[in-house]
Image (cartoon, rainbow, N blue to C red):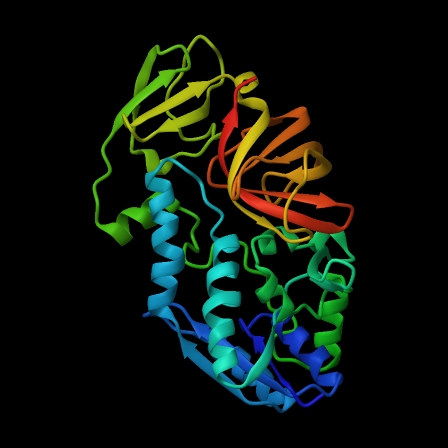
Length: 352
C-alpha cells in the first residue's frame, strides 16, 4: 500500500475525517486544497493545512481560480441566461474535483483522489464497471451530485465516509482532536454565499438584464419581470403579480422572447421528461425501457419511473405519478436499489 492518495480538503469536518480514516489505514496521503477565488481570506486553506499537520502528511494549495471560472461559474451563468436552472455542484464534481483536481493529483504522483462525500464505489467484476452506490445513511447520501462521473473518474475515487453518519463523523473528528471538528456545514453554493443568484450574475457579468412580460399560460399579460435570470420553474415568491386565478407560479421561461410564463400550481405537474448529456454508470447502454426509481432534484425522494435511452446521449423518463416543477438544467438521477444507474441533465418536461 505505497501508492499515495490525494485528499481533497475543503477545510471542513467531512474531508478532514476522510483523511483521518485513510491515515488510520496507513495509507500515504497528500492533502490538496483548491483556491477557487481571487480575493478574500481563505480560512479553508488554513484549516486544511492545520489538519494535515495534525495528522502528519503534506499539504498543498492549488490555484485553480481560472479553471473554476471557466468550468463552473461561466457555464452556470450561461444556463441561467438560457432560462434554465443548473446544479453547479454536479458540474463542479465532474469538471473540477474529479476533473482538474484529479489531473493535478495524478501529476503529483497520486493514484487516487479521496473526498468527504457520503457515497460508495464498488467494482463489479461481472460487468467490468465501477459502480456508484448510495451512502449507508440515506439522510446524508450524496450520490446524486456524483452521478455524472465517468468510469475513469470513479475508478480513481475514494469515499471513506460512505458507511458513516454525520454524527459519527463529527465524533471521530472530535475524538482525534481535529481543529475543525465542530465547524458548521456550508449550505449555499460556494461562490454565492448569500444565495441571491440574480445579484451575483449581474455583478459578475456587468450586464443589465432586460425586463420583459409575465404572461399567464393562456397568453394573458400579467405584468413585467425583472430579467429571466431572477426566476426558476416552480417559483412563487417574489413575482409581484396577482390574478383572479389565485396563487401564481413560474411554469416556463422563454429566453427567445424574454418571457416568463406563469400558471396555477396544478399546471406545474408532468409525468415525462427528456434528458441530455446522458451518463450511464452501471451499464454501457439501456436496452429497452427499464423500471427504475429517479429523482429530479437533490432534496427529494426517488419516484418509480420507466427510463428509456432515446439516443447516444439522450434519455426519456416517464414517472408513475406526475412530478411537480420538472426544471430544465437540473439533473435527473436514476437508481436501481442503492446503485446509481446513471444521470442526465433535464432538457424539458413533456406535456401530458
